[in-house]
Length: 239
Image (cartoon, rainbow, N blue to C red; front, side, top):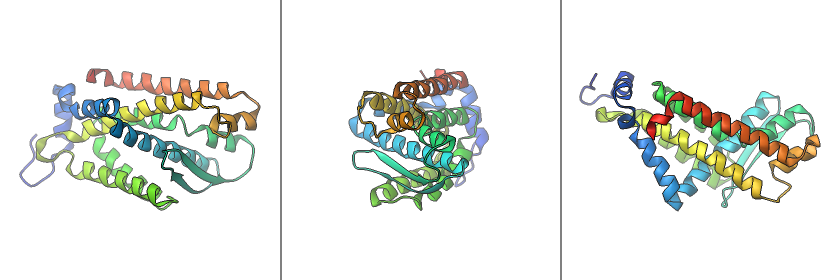
């Protein structure tokens, strides 16, 4: 199906092209991944997105277990902090602390699967709403700017991603998913090398008396599971 002049193409346009030529329809994913791997500025932007999702993971799980979410920041060095309040110890605190590092991998796998199954439009619409809600919880100008930029890009992808019959939307969503998966492994490698006991593995060790390496292993398993899910969803056709 082709789009009429001046109107957005329907979802079936993207679906048809995905069915006929997955690599051709999802080429923007290849471009995004290559840029992040090869270009340091692009990698820095990817790390910022990874940090945003990491902190959102803390916030989302914190709210699910009954904690209060007060806000979050992303620093100039791309480190982040999400502030929740509730019991100082217990399962809720553990789950909230644990949720940050696997969040980019889990969301990344979900985005790739959605893109490959024709849900890129719904994902970008929902993503725009979620990012605007997160915007009010930003606690620095830098953080607010990053969240607003992400929301604007998500909205533009929703409205114009498939304009003129070119199915960019699915490829962009799949590409962001793959980038988040890369950033999940990148963040895990960085925290594994760190000796800072105030980071999440040290906090979890203090809360549970289980060693930091145990928590690193659980994150590695979560990232591996997300990577396997991406492959199973058909992302292997991109390579």
